Amino acid sequence: MCDEQIPEEIDVENEDETQEHYHADARNLEKLNKQAFDGVNRFLGNGLRSVESYNPRWYYKELACWSVKEYITSSGWKITAVQGYSKANPVYRDVHTDIDKSESCVADG
Image (cartoon, rainbow, N blue to C red; front, side, top):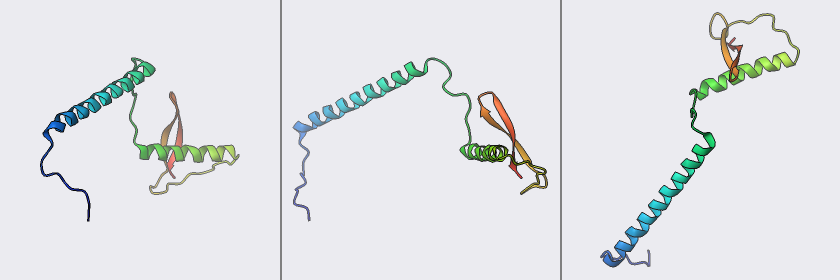
């Protein structure tokens, strides 16, 4: 099967060298991680790292709602009535289109 022989005993003389090599690699990795972290901190500054979290499923649904509204508006169509799709009445959602702006869009209708 395999021509290589598996040593039965651990070479004690090389064990210290192997451990030192491992620890040196770990120290180098820690140093690289710290440099990357420091670089990100310098770039972002001391302000907030995040303002809000989002649910990707809702994000894409809101994006689809807004896209349909924009497509209809840009095509010059006029909506005369909106019916509910899975509910009796249409459901509208405020979709954030900018950091401080939102638009009401049909989410279910």
